[in-house]
Image (cartoon, rainbow, N blue to C red):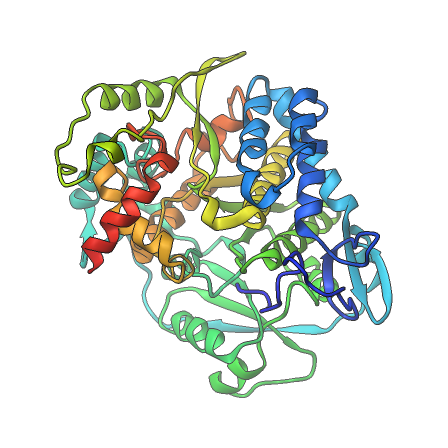
Length: 513
């Protein structure tokens, strides 16, 4: 869901923002400018302060945040992973600091973001529901390298990914369980609200194929809705979409022309619509936007989640986490990475000059002592994605952490690196992805990623041992997503990801050429 195509509000030299009907945004500074950079720096420093005051001081001292934000984001994970209470403190403080700096602007009025859904309550949307006409898929099948894998082939692929270090064993175990319990894929009793229904990584196609009720939210763009509606028609599920009150579309073309809502600008109206939706349901956030707008849309989704959770007890949350972030990983992954480092050679890299190979560094030079034993810190942040992307994705992890501690069902799963359109538009990332296999990292195609991650969501919804459950036996919030991570090999690679990024891109350019 590319929320809007604004010029980033933290661009150097950007003019003061005319907030007008801008909807969700961050507070302006004394100079009248909205700076995502300044807000992010303050929020990260606030989140660090109660658990590692020295790291908070270091974050406050960073002069060039756009270039040097990587270390403070790593410090957040290191500080939070030592104890479960520390992780909770980071999440709660970070969320509070971010929302303290968030506002909603409409018609010359400005209110704190979390007050927006109480300030504007008039309805603006009604529902149109489409019934699919296809039969339900009765088992889990996975598209992979131009083929569709079924049954034993899916199991073989899952085990191969584990053997190659592409996913954690818990990921494969969860999907093996879904294969063992095909009745779980009858989702006729499941409702999922998909924020970002047009996103390549969203689960709606698979959910509809398995008979779910999908409530779709995305921008009012006919090209998005024509595709989503066509998918629903040829599925076994139901699709409900928001349309303006009184619009009464008579056919699919007319529906595509009026469907949708802008989450950033119409947050209160979407809340009014969703709060009356029959439940229970899961609110799934799969939104994306470029630059500073990504923070705005992530904040809008988070404010919507907070408002719904405050008014209903039958709403759960779902997110997809990016593999290119910082994570605390189990000691077994660290040990495997170190074995690979000790066994490394020039096989497959013989064309590189030795001076280039000499710049490679090990993935885990050390471990962190925690109350549950030593853990490694997988620092997979990619500077090309930028600090706004890092803040938007960290916001979702904080929300999942806090929600589970508050007794809310919250599924957050790490998806593998994937060749989505947003990635391949970035030439440097596209080249690095093309060369990543040289370093033990597998980059997935969108159809593979969204299918397996949708199946993992089904596992979280159905399993009594799901890490998404607030009563799950989990020693630390980090373990909830580390256990069944599909990181694409980044955690078990011999090499620190940023140390090979440039070489991977160079090799990728040759490969693509």
